[in-house]
Length: 245
Image (cartoon, rainbow, N blue to C red; front, side):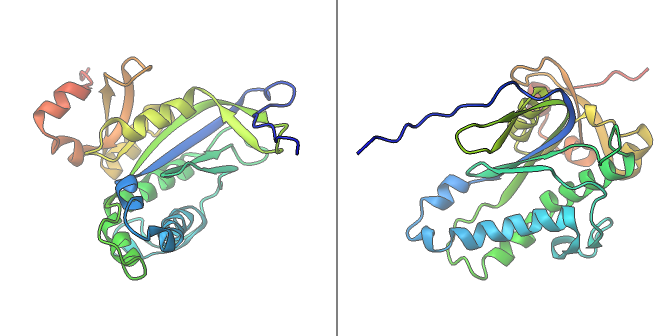
């Protein structure tokens, strides 16, 4: 019998540069959860719950985890939906490109996406309680972490299975941001372009991530109150505040 060749290969050249928005999420404690007895019987139930929440945040529906909170409750679909989604074992990669005919993302879409993901991160304990209804194990992942970045992406077409893969500065950056400060759990690159007015209105602030591997002194967006509540040692080791003019 001929042995199947285990090789990844790509067709032709990478696509021309595209403008993209990248979100990567990770489930903290997923490995510990997965190592529990008989978890194979429940893993799909758990993951389906999590991806349902992500889908509601983007495609609309009832955000039961924060129904009484601002920007939650009954959500309308975002004006732009992801063009690419990839499961990554303990999380997933989402990529958006501007709507057809548009050169960029509008500010309302960007603000809504940021707020919805922050809400899901903040009220994730409610999702965990929902998961516990049909996932009878003790060590469920208790936190979800998000990293967002924006910039140039390139599409690669695989010749071995016709799938699409993406590379680019912002893909790497979103991955780094997602794991940079677990105590926050939500960090977005300032390259998203949210206005100062939007940041102030929704309680975000800009700071400098000074020890982000491969990215020297990246300006990022974090929740202002959560940042202030960080231990002083954590703030000093990971961030610098932006000098006010």
